Image 1 (spheres, rainbow, N blue to C red):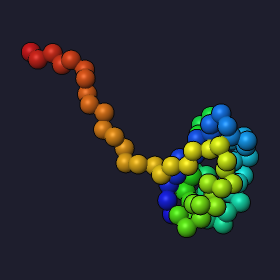
Image 2 (cartoon, rainbow, N blue to C red):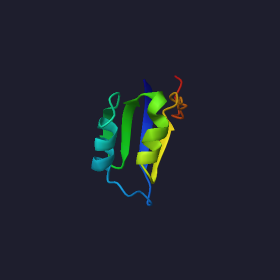
Image 3 (cartoon, rainbow, N blue to C red):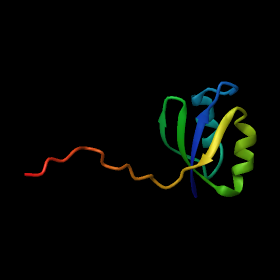
Length: 78
């Protein structure tokens, strides 16, 4: 399984609810989370081309590793 981020663009013809149903229509598709116009899904990498074809106007990208954010707070030393 591969974790993917799906993002709706202005050219998308499907709503987020409809895109969720497309993902669930695949045997290995599972929606992990949804926030607004973005879906986080677990998906079979062998079916990735078929998913992209059905989600016209959606950006389908692999979720990358988390990026560490530097601590920019000023620390006062005694």
